[in-house]
Image (spheres, one colour):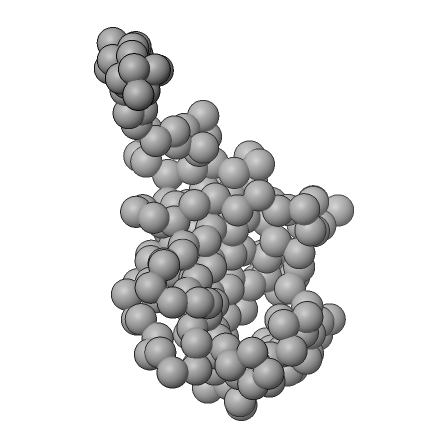
Length: 196
């Protein structure tokens, strides 16, 4: 007990026990306007709050963020930008069909038919696909929004996924963070393929 009291007193006197402010993993990449310059290729405003930068080992994504809650399992949202989304077609409607054949395949998700909406993104044609999928064995569901657009002639995509148990509703609040991320995204220089 005396050791505990002494340890607590030393901790109070030590700077090591003072709560440190969270470290911004993107601080070195921040520009004066608050945006982040990623890989000297694109700039965007990262989502605020409880979103954390995902350390990626795969080549599928160029940047990703995740947010979790603890009320139930699963309770996670992810936002990502992909330089080369699944599929090969340059036509958005064909590409989304190719894309959803492989998207989240390891999770055994069965997707409903996506709702498709043509739009523009940064003055370029885009296609938004919104879809819900279910993983019935584990009792999970996922709500996804995928925005297909172009970088030069190549198709790129932005993903948003929200995972919930089958008996829990989806929370639309995180979708606004995704939309803001996509809306802030801009290419700073031509891609490798555009320079060929």
